[in-house]
Length: 451
Image (tube, rainbow, N blue to C red; front, side, top):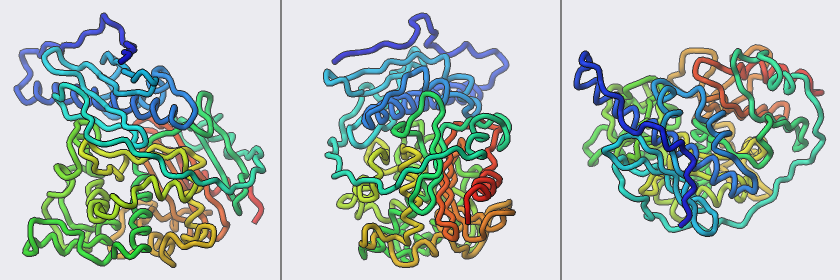
């Protein structure tokens, strides 16, 4: 095994000595934050580099530090830069795992790479990387059907060259497709059409689509109970898959958006952290955006994913540069942890313009696009509505009322406009506090295209 050491050996591994005024809880919180920051860094380095290499392109640690590890949430942003790391490769040169040191009395935090499955965070305290999931043989690859008429569009250029759509926003890729024709495709320096990025919550819309595929196969029904709770007497059994897709489960979540740091960066599993939250409202009565609802919806179809994994669906669509990652026990983290490219996301949007029909074969139920884009029950406050796993842009001035979209953290957007036969993809690494104005961008892009 070859080890590539990329951290400065003079970096301090130990926790900073707590000042006398710190309480025990503050010291525990500071230690926990370092453990999470190390997991964040290990996973981002592992996924960004390993999946880029899978796709036939490259990322460097310096590039990941500049984009994925910059402008992240506090307090992790103050910690990640100081943590030393190693990238360990197999003799074949494939990444085996990434190790990040965070405390002098604990093992490094590890993110392990499984070919075909991306990377996963090992639990805090794991001594050595696990080999709990067998490598997956990639499915046969599909082929994209877009024609190329790439040209310069003023709004696309502005998204890269100015702050017209948000102060501090950092665009990495834009793709505009109309009637299967690429109208514009552009990437930031250091990125190309094969460079994957984390989808963040765009994965929720991918999750809704995978559920749709299970419905089409006759293996799921959105009106069925999601199976939450310990027995049939548990009132959470009344929560359906539809409730979960619409963020209307009625379950408690501890923070807005339901931060799932123990799962994302701490090495916990979906089963441990996402399925046990109690009810505080009757299902279907309240809207509460929560990662745990999407995770529970996917858990409800978990038996079908063994024979029909996400990679199989991606291959059908020609999304050959997309990887859905899992926790260290194999539970898919489809609330956030998918890595993909702008072109693959355009293919994802196109299947909705085609109402779930691919090359003459129906892979999503008839009317599924209408289902995911139709509001039902409680709605969020703010400028956007919510359907079933997708956001609605029916309140956005200058945007067709039938527009719906997948939104993700740090500026990930897939906008689907059925009435104009258009898909708009914007990728970014926007720092905390900066927001790309996707409604204005969509309006301006559509205005440049002939009706």
